[in-house]
Length: 619
Image 1 (tube, rainbow, N blue to C red):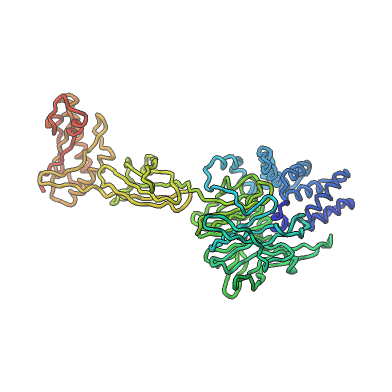
Image 2 (cartoon, rainbow, N blue to C red):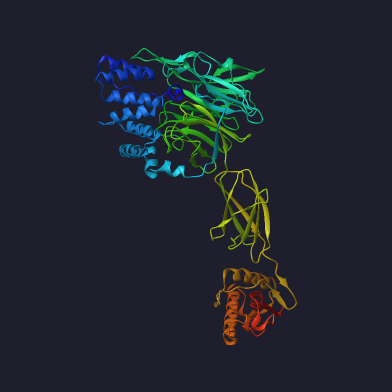
């Protein structure tokens, strides 16, 4: 039985007026008053008496859905959808089917839902990615998940929050003998456990000064550990209303503030957002502690429960603001948790694996990402929190049958992108030679996109040394750190190689041409641009280009090819704004080798002989 659905969400299902026998009426009254366990027994009695109608099946299925028994929920939603069911029933049927691994039938039900509610955000997301779960399962994990010694399969434990003084706060049903009739489970209390430096936890203890006879928690804690916001059941504080039809009290959750004085929590004050008509719960503080996020089903929301926020002032609080349709859907959004650059939350309305999934809203990019497996599963995954000081996360899931607290350690599968640029022109340099070394001087594979972009798979917590070489440029290296997830971009600038100017010539790197061609290549253009810069700096300088080939071809062929290359070089220089009277050239083929090796030249000697000389006629 899932207490979080019953008490912490307070899913208010609208009353439907219909004529029925006394058994059906009794079951409906129990359902209306949130006593879902008792309502299930009463509805099953109606079914066994052959007196069930479409509403009986729907509310029986809804009862199982709310206490998260997807197997039974799917069974009765199948009956409820046989005749003219509403869109939300088809959606819940699909969610239940996903949670029991029947994705094919779940997609059929989502297709029906999407046809009935095409403008619903859940329908739009489904139509954009109907095979979302399968596609997400193939992606790299961004967290390692481990069991904790905090939880056991005998109790319900969730909403873990690790404070900066290494205390893990969470809520649990342990050690409580009083039972909530709506769930047939013990009431929740707030517990704490001191975490040692090696990550081990001390035996949890209940915070007695915050304990009531009803539900207490979840909590949010300030950075200094001395201010706490926490939720509390309305039965102990007067936040309840009586159902007119059943005369049963329906409690509402409220948020309260407490301060720690001499090691004890005191000065408990109710927030002004609390009401007898709706619930507020799941408090979470922003990093600057000037904003409080929370979950509520207050009027003005978009779904069953939404995430809201209020400003915190020295003199009080601001007006509640809904986070809008970027975060909230027609389903359930809950359990917010804020860090410096992101908001984590749980949702049943966004594309997921089933039940509640954990999502991350990135404030920098504005994107929302499902955290994927293994944090999320086809069961209920929620109450994710990340302590940035210790780089450790915790969350809860009922994948093992009860709400269990898990630890999650970030895995950084960052795609690190490197752009190699000319430091002068800021243009990307193609065909650079890159080397990436990690902290252990281990070489990391670098991939090229062929357009000046280079990539390597990085780890979040590792520093790397990136080195680059390129023809015509001075080599350069830099130390970089991939301190974020998903993608990081680095720019490595190379200074153009300084041109050597003697009394007789301007010395550049070899000007390479394609085999048997005379067209200027990208590499050749880069080198010739250096000559253009020199001639601009020396406006009276005149240059004679002498082009040479190796001795592989015939004398006549080499002479013709070298002259074509010399003229192409001259034309390129002129195209850059240098006047034709300052640049001329001629090819001399293989007549003037730098190394006179004849027919026995090695490849290296041939390469040395293939060259262009830029002789200074006038300086």
